[in-house]
Length: 83
Image 1: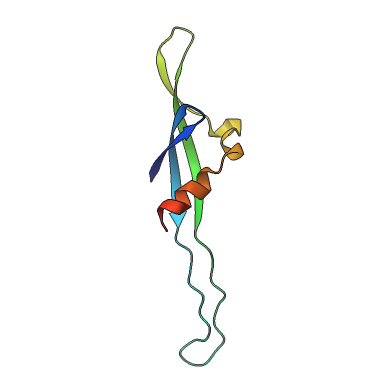
Image 2: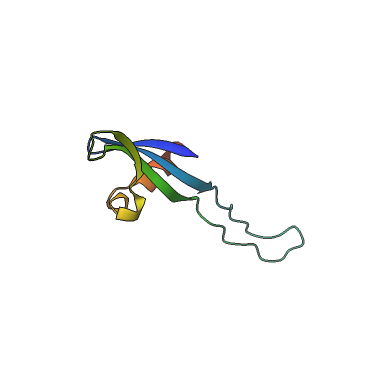
């Protein structure tokens, strides 16, 4: 899936996977204890930005390895779109 994010004026095309989580179950139908469930989660797999190379050509670059993306709450913003 993709999500467009504005990172301080730099537009990112964020590629991610979404896990909707699992609802809490108090008891199973046979009376056994249930499960606590899990919260929804997002895993960002790429964050592409259009940048310029030395020759002033547009180049789409995955900036996720630079760890800049982790300074922003992109995952939280993506999760809010599912609420």
